[in-house]
Image (tube, rainbow, N blue to C red):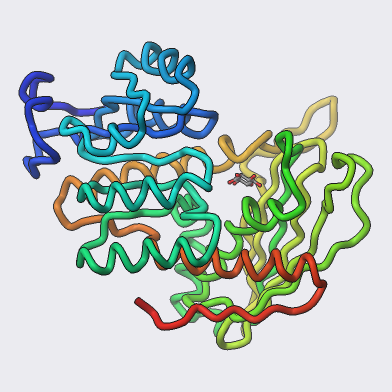
Length: 353
Ligand code: ISE
């Protein structure tokens, strides 16, 4: 629950976050579709030290309805929300193609941002953000790679970092969704879904991805006409760790994300979903989450709390940043090229900024 210790009149009179640890961080959510509404709920509810103060969406009726639901201001122009003196920080959950402009405006306004993935939809536009933030000389942007806040992924990373099993040789990844939203294209399996594996490979190994190849097995009859689903993705990291990803987004029944690490002296698997196994007349078994909102709900909560804590403490944003967003965009763009050509495509990130 938010813990505001100053009255509304006191903190709405501020211009930007005042750094007083008793003041809540006043956040506006831009884009209140499915994900933005989920984040608005998170900020209005369990995130301590945050106060949801405004929402904004291109759909004016939706903006008004969500604003009324949370009792906050409806701002119809997202750009005005960014410069609003009573907004300290922004959550950007608008469609990916709008991110570049909004994030650059937020950087210009000097406001911290939690931007949903992808950072932007191309490496060139992501790189512009990397450079704009570098020119400011301080980190303001966190990218919404929520898997880094998931307890199981954190344990797997700790295991890799400990060196107990030796060098990672393979990562076998499974990423399955029950269904896709309308207009989900074959490229989006890479840009919208596999982007998470790209980030998690970088997070687990601490290395960049240097090459990617996308193969297209026969498509499931359960996918919409023309969608190449499933796809099989192979990535290589700098030191030669090999990664395979089965991305399958119309399994019809539920959400599954698994990762098996194979290292020199052993292996470890996460995402088996074996939390509770029941035995009954119906047989034995557990449950499969319906979607990512449930599977990664706790990770989103931790992600938001750590973003708010970092901004309020004055130490600045410290979660996955613009370089992570840029690297993921570059690998995914190479993946889309490979999807078209069937060839292995090398990734060149250029100099680290
Ligand atoms: C969606 O946008 C997500 O981010 C989910 O985590 C992923 O599983 C899904 O495939 C994407 O469409």
